[in-house]
Amino acid sequence: MCGIMGYVGELNAVQIVYKGLEKLEYRGYDSVGIAYKDNFTVTIAKEKGRVMDLAPFVKNKSSDLAIGHTRWATHGEPNQQNAHPHCSNQNQFILVHNGIIENYQKLKVEYLSGYSFKSQTDTEIIVNLIEYFALTMPINEAIRKTMSLLEGSYACLVLDKKNLNCIYFFCDKNPLLLGIGKNGIALSSDITGLVGVADQYIVLEDKTFGIAYLNRYSLYDLIGLKINVKPKPILVTAADIDKKTFHHFMLKEIYEQPMMIRSILHKYFIGDEENISMKLLNKIRKCDKINIVACGTSMYAGMMAKYFFEKLCFMPAEVFCASELIYSTPLISKRPFFIFYSQSGETADVLAVMKKVKKQKFPMLAITNNVESSMGRLTDFCLDIYAGKEIAVASTKAYTAMIVVSAILARAISGIKTNLKSNLKGVSLAMEKVLHNKEICLGIAKELTDASDAFYIGRGIDYWVSLEGALKLKEISYIHTEAFPSGELKHGPIALIHKDTPVIAIITQEGTNRIIRSNLTETISRGAKGFVISSKSLSLPEDTFVIPNVAHYLSPLVSAIVVQLIAYYTALLKHNDIDKPKNLAKCVTVE
Ligand code: M6R
Image (cartoon, rainbow, N blue to C red; front, side):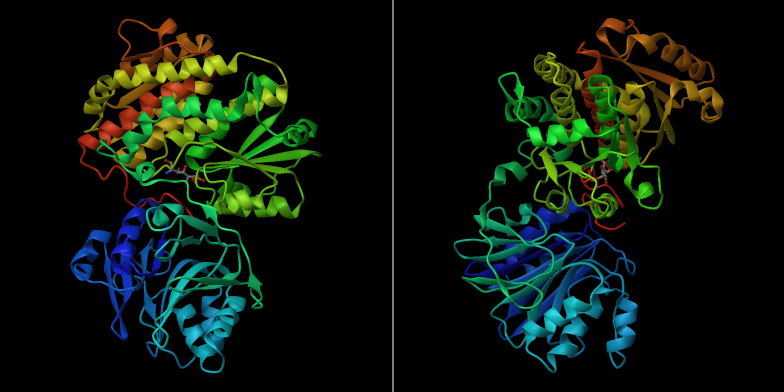
């Protein structure tokens, strides 16, 4: 959601920022803009639409200083006026902003009564406050004064037309990374923007203010004291964020899963022992209930985690939707433990709950693909899911990685030496076999493209994968898809079945095989087009996709690949923008 990019240095800043914005596209956005030093002034280009819409404006342009932005509209519709960068009234300052300023109306009334505003954004208030305070104080102080008044979240880059040697930057509760390269300094909302431009980076702490020059930078806290932070090497390479030979990141990421499981095993096992801190395990062992908090796909991974904690560790666990939990007051047990699942580590709904939990001093763990994210920094304990960078908005490998890490964590908590490791190796092989038979998913997709509604059904863990299958399909194919526990159909949803409604049943558990089949038959009798994804040992000759047998509690890892491929091919046949589906963002930083 929104992306920021800035560069000052010897290389061509216009092209670096333009390319950086392209790399940040995956975060989700609906308008785009760039500002660059042009002789002794600043040229601004902004558009509603895609980064490529800026191409004519930046073609053959060069500069040593530029900032850019991809905007996901919150305050004011996506249009050119609301797109960033925004200028102050006297045109001295130019600013890009990620985040939301909650008290912008109040600040407008209090400080900016004589000012005029060209957009409906909360952002314009920031750039004008800087200008207002800069009338009576040095720019550094004017920015810090502005920061002290802002409520909400922000990561900002500012250019000052009176001093076009540097980029000013500041942030609070919104990610901003400083990249240090041989030829200059870059700023970006995430590491992907820095790849190829910088070798080292610093994740800026909340309430940091800084200045970046061609070959140096300074960081300060809110009261103006200098901060020293040791930069870390950038380990993400251009190859990690490259589509390689795949047409879409989503397909590439689906294909990465078998290998990813092997590398997770490598990270989390030393021989037969789990490589997880004893301190964390003991903390969890002492609790009386595990509370799992997440959103979307991560929440569905959390449902599998609940199953592992209950079945393998005999510990009660409950899954909460973060956006619901924040506005409710559930009964909390005497010794709770909280686990937060998030691919990005920046999801606002999850962060809001984390902060509440932190205030109450309950122990917590974050399981994320971004250990340096806001969540990673807020939590007591953090486990990396080692999925590698996930670029497609529709999450695939992060889902399976979260499930794998949860299974390993559950084994470690239980202290029981099961053969999880070899079972997971079996899963990796089974995933490869599924990928080998991807044409079957293409066949199913052909039957789905004209549908207005589709349903996934299952029971128990098959139902939880159904939820994920339905989410994937609706996200990228735009077909209205729901998942139901198959036993619930007759209590209402079966009324929605009409001629040729696709119903996909997932059947991998012996105990529920017969009953799911019978529920599916009930829908077929009412006109539905039925499809069955089943485990080999339970399969019938007429089943649509037979997946290899794996340890029964790990089967969702394999059926997940099938539902991901079905969603992918359906979206492909519908010519949708698979990696950047409409209205969605990869990193959901607003509540
Ligand atoms: O970064 P997170 O895992 O916290 O994100 C949570 C959801 O926004 C995310 O899983 C979303 O549902 C994806 N688009 C699913 O494909």
